[in-house]
View 1: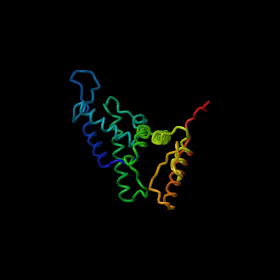
View 2: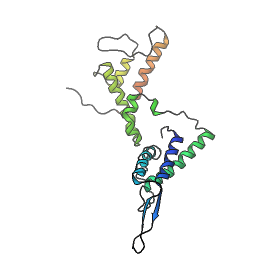
View 3: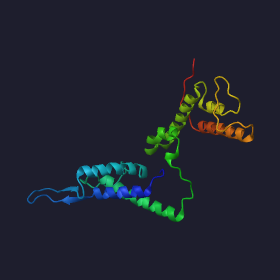
View 4: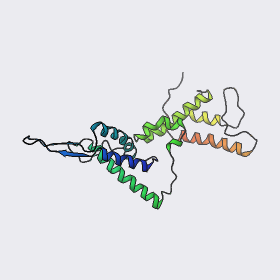
Length: 215
């Protein structure tokens, strides 16, 4: 699960649970009926509006909540939302308590800190649990943007970035990307060699889509 504001999420989910609480209404006297449920603290439109916000949180905390095999509360409106919200609150509160007392021991990366080329192209895939597809889409998005920035479509992804970060002087048809100015020192060469090799390794480690041969 990507990093979220737990306190805010818990507050919103608890607010939804209050708004979407239901009560059983007995049938009128003399009417043969099992009765019905209605929202106790809000109108139906208000409960639906609160449910829309809750859905965004639940998709992040319990990605499979829409299809999970839970015992159904028959005839109760928004029963799955409420069941998922109760579970999500318990999870978030326990996770917060554990991290506050034990610490995770691992770095956290907020998606908002990623470059828009990356997160903007994969947010939907990642949020829906398609992690492998998201990584591949991110790699392709960076490659497409790099091709546009460099004005080149004559080299494969790995070759393109390796060539772009080359410490050789640019030549016609072979522009360069620069991280720092060239002062003739080892730092300039090491940073650009490292950037080119890192990008090449990322692309070679992930399967690329098949491209038909030209001619």
